[in-house]
Length: 203
Image 1 (tube, rainbow, N blue to C red):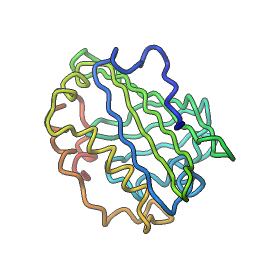
Image 2 (cartoon, one colour; image 1 turned 90 degrees about the vertical axis):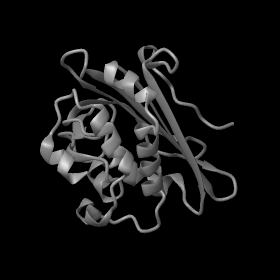
Image 3 (cartoon, rainbow, N blue to C red; image 1 turned 135 degrees about the vertical axis):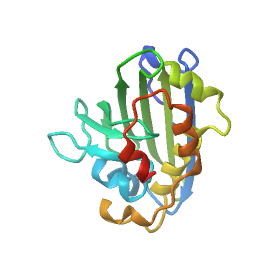
Image 4 (tube, helix red, strand yellow; image 1 turned 30 degrees about the vertical axis):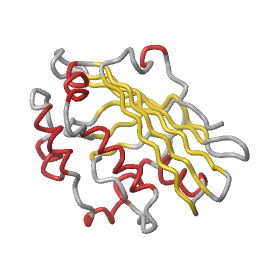
């Protein structure tokens, strides 16, 4: 049986304003291949275009439980985030990573999210990567109604980046990545939010 996300009650899917789930299963990779790319926040920009303005935790680049960090995504300015789970892969044990992130402000722009990951080895030299996000706030409710769904497509880009064979070793090599058109859709949708213009120009 495959592993499931452990949800805090506040973010339980079906009770929030938006929820997305993406999953991929790939042959020829392992959880130990994927984990450093995911847990080391300084690697994100090397394979995922839809993030910027990354501030790693004071403890270092690898996200550990209790760490605080920030990054911008989907047109929002850098969101304050806190790690709730960070469990590296081990024999018979899936890797887990989860954080909450929030932007305060008026109701039309405030948002509170919980983003969780599971990375686990499967039989037959396969790895499963599951990422799910639950969101609270008016922007989240708007996004849930959008078609195409920018959050769903953006997270699929993240999964695709993690499983690419040519992921660079450093974040400095992200200049050649192509932006996802749905990112611009989300930016237009969230025009009531306070956005970082320079971050938008990079998308």
